[in-house]
Length: 113
Image (cartoon, rainbow, N blue to C red; front, top):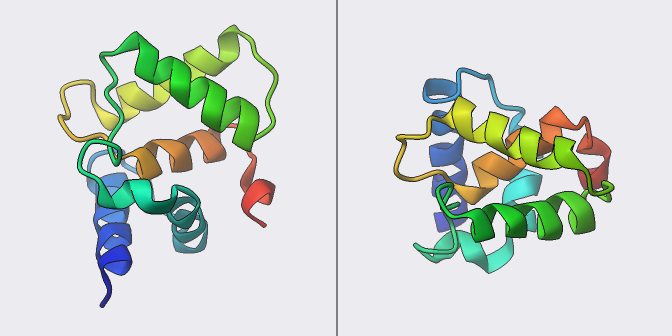
């Protein structure tokens, strides 16, 4: 099993055990691949939920640029909702997991079609 497959398995485990949801493995794989090489970097692979600037980056680069959503308060509300689901006290909030949950939240799976 390759490094990426190991990471996808870890993300699926987080979705099941920390977020209480059954992952769509096909979508999770596509979202993970979409994250590019950042998944292999300890710092870039996680979302620092306590840093406002990091959440703005998720909003701008992922929700607006990747998913094509328009800016509005609902974007930050969704990010905060996903962070709450993951668990604010959870130290490692993996970017691929956060992006997966946001993709599901906005029903934008077609972006990864």
